[in-house]
Image (tube, rainbow, N blue to C red; front, side):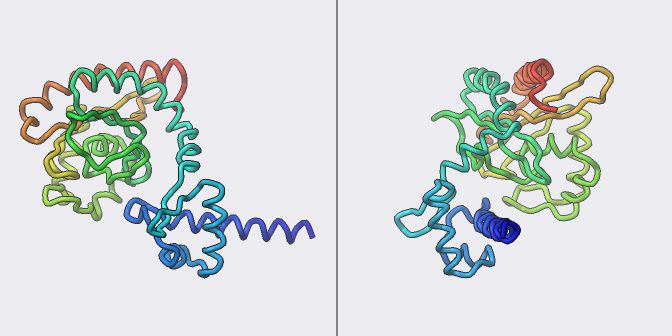
Length: 261
């Protein structure tokens, strides 16, 4: 009896997880029928699971009948070490950079072939960007992503270079050119983009590098800033030292607190 109950419990859990997995960056709002289709769940089962997930706070049903991810999952996600500890250490440094520049400042880590945005500080004067805390964007199309990709294992780089996706007409998708850009990032210690993810926006980013004892250096995160394209040539070169100072400060705090393994 106990074994059967456990099996049933696992089945219910896996179905609920498939329902949640129906949501992604391209599908943030879904109807009941869309969730059922994307999760491979019978309509009646999906309806029951959605009611339970809404009651718990994992999902929210909007007035138009579509479902979106709820606050409960957001709160749980913030407890993940890469979110909570890294963000706690780095936030003061991001705020310092934003206060000095009034531009949008990002902190990201690599998640597969995506840049996962751990923190962001922006204001009314900042150029609009698509990134949000918790969002994932392609490594090859954003400044922080290019920094992380340049430091990624060879297998990850090869996977991205096989078929880089085009986000705007300016996105670098030629594998040979992208490979040369990554080599330059490794040489110079910074990465630049211009309208590759968002029209009207340019960015520069630097790595947050950890070095502990005799172990090799590790790029724990990437710190970047976004400016309007008309300011890129004038401002991005002078912002690199500003970001590097902040990145070194973050690295010192990470090494001291062991917030990132």
